[in-house]
Image 1 (cartoon, rainbow, N blue to C red):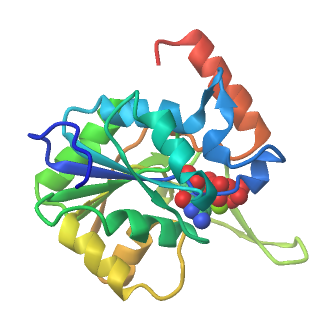
Image 2: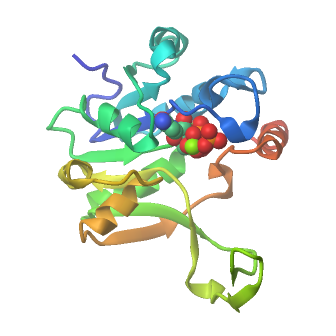
Length: 232
Ligand code: CTP
Ligand code: MG
């Protein structure tokens, strides 16, 4: 039996949280690293649980930390915890496997995007509910982007106006995500990429600067500052 949050919700949120956090430097799995005194995963899950459409949350934890993560999150919200895999895609696949077939919408949301507002979760879910098979939150790219050779010689300037920076949660009709994962061969870093490969149209909605992915040490500093300054 999977833990339920809001029986009337139509969304399952998978939270891959099994990564090592190599780019953040030494200090254990990233999802368990502290931000303003609490693990990143707690920040992320608390915001997911605050989105009214969410019926269930499935966290893919580092294999050695499944029990610890259950104990950490249970006081906050009902949650199912599975052991993640070596690649993000495998972690998502294992979490997806425990979602009952009668949940129509599945979102995949990085634990590392710990400050993602519940509103963004609702906006992705509602675009799927409105009939889009796959939905991703995106932001315009701010830097000028150049293509360069391995030696560092500039080959050209890319037209920035057609580019989008992609965030999570990424939302899918349940059967679309299940089929895309079943057909997957090479591991990708996002789930919409699997849908694209399967020929599924992917729709962009406006993302949020608060959904930044905590990847490098500076990102932790930014996230701490955001928490200190805003009602986030
Ligand atoms: N993730 C996962 N299982 C993996 C790898 C990543 O569940 N085998 C999760 C991470 O925990 C994170 C999300 O996927 O919430 C996005 O990955 P990323 O930001 O790359 O996190 P890490 O893989 O932990 O970081 P790094 O690549 O620096 O090691
Ligand atoms: Mg990674």
